[in-house]
Image (cartoon, rainbow, N blue to C red):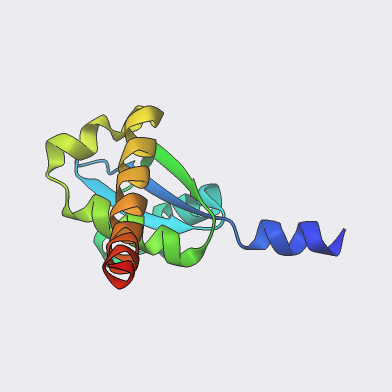
Length: 116
């Protein structure tokens, strides 16, 4: 039972929320509903203060905080048009997989060079 609790506590989410002024905000949280409530109460990120209420457009589950932070940064670098399509779970998943493969590819190249 303790192992399940420990595993669940490692789960993080990346979310994209639409503010009342139609801008998009990307963040990470362990509990997205609670975090959105904090934003709406004016106790979240400075950017979202006065821009509520927020509506969650997309959510992606991550295995760790590190993975969530990497994905959050990747989403924030996207142009608005590409963020808009992340509500489609397949596209959000594809972005996460692409990011993960880019992160692991240099290791594979380094190994192949060592063998040569």
